[in-house]
Structures are given as structure tokens and as C-alpha cells.
Length: 518
Image 1 (cartoon, rainbow, N blue to C red):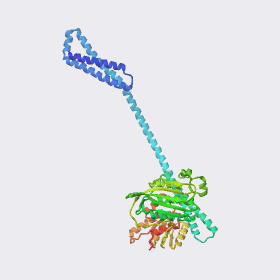
Image 2: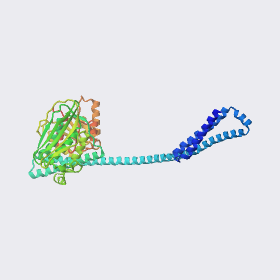
Image 3: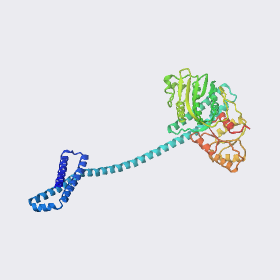
Image 4: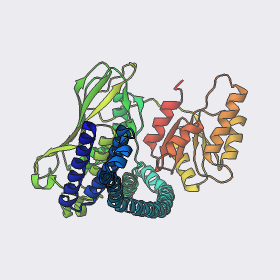
């Protein structure tokens, strides 16, 4: 009887708590879910308790019901009510839980629909992006092809304009003729600079302006820089001074881009300096066993730049004020391109120190990895150019443009070289193995066979025949000046690459570099 009393008490407590829970708890869906589970568990508990009570009675209850009489119906009533209440709690629990099941199903259905819609949108968006990407790539390709064609077509006649004007200026002229030809030559140089700046700026916008990594000698690079800028400095009667530190090891970076940066700064200095001097200074800032940081500076004694104008000179297509464009010309791209190149080379931004009428100083820092130790060849300070011994040699000119043939032949024969001319790559290959030449100047674009294919064939035949270790220097002399053209030439087997317009200095450089003086 004691166990019956305890179990009945438990059942009564559970019933009371659940009734209170049902009355007091709100209609929140999460609470309804918890309440449903509570009633289901309670229902099972009551049924379980009632079952336990029957088992503990061990059939004594049935005997008691028969003997007691009226008490029999009371016991049966209590047990029936207990089980019914347990089942009622189960029903209430399932009723409380049912909306959650329905809502879960509805949520699952909506999520499935949203997922399908999202997948469809992703597929549609991916298709649109693919079309936009293809269109952008096609536009970029068309733009690059257009720029490449325009560059080639403009450089070809420009080569003749600049080249023949330079040759004519070297002849005996009266003052008026010399003035006219000098104007033509300067106009050609300005047009060439304009083309180069626009091409580089378009590469910057497209993110395609790249730098290479190679070993080079600092002093060799400066000698070439002086040689390239000698004419523009001497024309204005300026002095070009160098203050170059001694670097005993080769530097690893892009010498062509570094030369371009310094040439831009020298060109600006020449443009804005009427008299005096331009100084190129290179000094070490930091050095470790395998790296060195150098500071490059180009200063002039020109018109200077006021402080309020200095904030604008590094913006694209911008100069200190509009009168500069009228008085001195230029696109305003030189400093912008130089700044971008310095960044690509890992250096600091281009900085300026200047005051009106007191000259300007542009400077920047560049890090370099250190390479091998070369043979030391010092550069003499304060010397504009170093005379070099130019070997007289036999040169094969592979070129199809009549004006370029006349110009190159005139330039080279004037130096004493013997020239053979053929007008396409196929004839160039034939000539190479029928006669002996010291150097080949090879155009890239020609009918029948271009210069790239001709060079590949020459190198392949050289390898097959094993010509006693003889390597024929082949130099690209081309109006193709886009990114990748130099790499294509070198990959095909050419030794060097010069772009048109070609001047006598660039020709002498490749001859002295690739032809043995002896």
C-alpha cells in the first residue's frame, strides 16, 4: 500500500505541474514545442506509473475489488482515469508539437524553393559574367591588337623621319636648312615619346605592364643611359654630370625599366633647363650580404616647381600648369609611368624637392638583389660619352620596307660596314648559309617568312650542322614594341632587340656588344 500511495502522489504532482504549465506558459512557438515534448513525456510517465501500480498489486487489487464491493468500482475508476489522463497528456503533447512539424515542413519547402531559385540565379549570373568576361577579353585583345598595329605603322615612317633628319644634320648645311631639319628631328622625337608614353599608360591601365629580372652592371647601364640621352643634352648646351657609387657586384632587376625611369627624369630636366647642368647621382642607402638599396636622383638647374604645383605633377595627363604644355609640350604621363615602374620594381615613390627658379631634384630608392662579381669597368664622372671602338664588319639586313632599307644602309655604310640586303626571312635564311656574316639585323614582320620563323630555322640548322661552335649574332630591328615582342624574339633565338626608330647610337651599341672587335 505504501508504494501505491507514493506512485499515486507522483502521478498527482505530475498532473498538477503540467496543468499549471499549460495555463501559465505563452503561445511562443518555441515554448509550444518544448511544452509539447513535456506533455508527451508526462503522458508516457503517467501511463508507466499506472502500469507499475498494477504490477505491484500482484492481482491483489482484483481480489479486493470483488470482496469490497463498492470499493471495486472506485479502484477501477481511479485506474481508468489515470490511464485516460496519461493518454490525454500524450494527445495534448502531440497537439502542441504538431504546428512545429507543420512549420518545419513549410520551412523546408521554402528553403528548397529558395535554394532552387538561388541556383538558377547563380547559373544565370555565371552565364552573364562569362559573357561579360569574354566581351572584356575580346575588347582588350582588340585594343591591344589595335595599339600594336598603330605602333608598328607609326614607328615605320617615324624611323625614316628621325633617321634621315639625323643623317642630313650630319652633312654640310646652311643655317636655314639646319634649323628646318632640327625642327623635323625634334618633332619626330616628340612624337616617338608620345607614342611610347601612350603605349605604356595603356598597359598600366590594363594591368599588363610587367618587369623582368636579370643581372646587369650598374656602370654599363649608366653608360648606355648617357649614350641614349647624349644628343638631347648636347643640343641645349647643357652639361651632364654623374656621381655614381661603386657597386662591385652585378645587380638583379630590370635594367630596361630602370633606364626608362631615368630617361624620363632626364628628359624632364632637359625640357625645363635652359642653361647649367643636369646631375645623375646614385648612392647606397642600405646593404646586406645579398641585397643593396640604392638612391637614384636626377637634379637640374632649371625653372623649378613651386610648392603648390608639386602636388599635381604626379597625376596622369597633368603638368604643373597649362602654360607648360604650351611652352614645353609633353603629355604629362612621364612621371606617372615612372612612379608605376618604381612600384613594380619594389621601390619607394618618386619624390621631389624644388623651388621656383632654383631647379628641381627628383629622387627615389630601389632595392636590388646582388649577383655575381663582374670584371670592374669604371665610369669616368662628368663625361658625357665614352668613345668606343666600333668593329668594321659584314652585316646582313633582313628588311622589307624600302625607306628603312635606305636609312639603315646609309647609317651602316657610313661607318664602313659592308651591307647585304634581303627582303624577307626566307631569303635571309638562304643568305646566312651561302655567305658569312658578322651580324644579322632582322625585321619581325615581313612577307613570305617573318623574322621569328627565320631565326628559328637558322638556329636549328646551326645546331644540326654544328658549325664549329660559331654563333651568328641576330638582332631584332623592328617596329614591334608591345609587351612580349622582345620575349618572343629572345625565345626564338635572337640575341638582342632594338625598336624603331633606330639611330646610329643604338646600331653602334649592338655592333660593339655582339661583334668581336678582332
